[in-house]
Structures are given as structure tokens and as C-alpha cells.
Image (cartoon, rainbow over all chains, first blue to last red; front, side, top):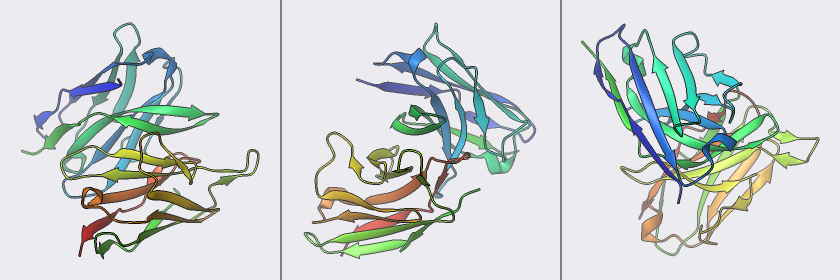
Length: 121
Length: 113
């Protein structure tokens, strides 16, 4: 059974940093692309970032490019999202998702329960 | 970025009746090399993460009831719930995954009338 468990969320001041983690199990982690998707309170879904199975290829939404860094440790079956220069508009539940990749495209087939990030002074 | 527009924003349907959600993309998400539509549908129940219902516009995921069906091609897509059940109350999102960034529709809330 696929399991994705996010952690690392919390309250942070504007301009601050936070690192999210996602522990994966139930599948061969290194063979799957992964993504982070966020959802602001009461709002819709926004894809944030994706990474290939090897970690050699990454993509970002323009809204986070240059501030967020996605990475993975395949030896630990863990996905990360380093978030710097946080803004109030980054406040959201952040979901980790397992991707199915077809060529250069991917869609998410399993999602974690999410971790809440609140950016406020 | 590709804009995905869903209609309606909310839908109230009687139990056992049909629910239809539309999704329109600002550019075609049909990839000519493989003739596949790069379009997925997700269901999100209150307090839960999204769940993948349909990929490739019309391929139902394993375990998804057959009352859910997807159709359409190019820029216009439809999710149909043929006979609404109480457990189908949720927000439904379409997403294109042909282009980066992958973009979602704004969501359609389905309620029981």
C-alpha cells in the first residue's frame, strides 16, 4: 500500500524558511517522479514543483521559482521541499504526491494527507 | 500557462440523478504523437487529500465506481456521475498535465439537493 507522510509544516514569519519532508513507502521510491502540490485555505489546488525519480530533473511553478527547492534522498525514501523567503501567500496545506510519468509529462496518482504551512507575523 | 476553466462552480443534484461537470482548457491537451488527451480528474472530499479518479480523459482508475466516467478531447472535457450517491459529495478538479506547469481547474462543488 502506497503511503506518503508529510512533516515539517508550521508557523513561520514572512521572509523565513521551512523544510518539508515526505516519507514514502509501499512502492519503489527511486523509480517514480514526485511532486508537491499546495492548497491555500478554502482555495483550489496549485502544483508547486516536481522531480524525476533520479532527482536529476526538476520543475517549479513561477510563483515559487528561485525561492523553493525540491530534492529527494532515494536511500531514505524521502522527498523534500526547502522553502525560503516565505510570503503570506505561501500559506497553504502542502501535499506530497507520487507521480506517473509518461515521456516528459507526469500526473499524480497518490497523495499524502498534507502538512499546513502558515506564514504570518 | 494553460488555463483550465470548470463549469459550473457548484452543482446540486438529487440522489440517483446525473451530475455533469465541464472542463475547458485554453489550449489543446491532445498530444498528436500518441493521440492521448493529457487530462485527469480528481475528487477531494472535505478534510481529505485529492484522489485520482480518471486519467487520460477517460481511463477510470482501479477501484473507482463505474458511475464515474470521463469524456472529451482537445480542449473540452466532461466528468459525469451517472447516479449520484451520498458519498460523492466532494469538490472535483480537472488538471492538464501535457504542459508545465500542470494546471488545475478552479474546482466544482457537488452537493445533494
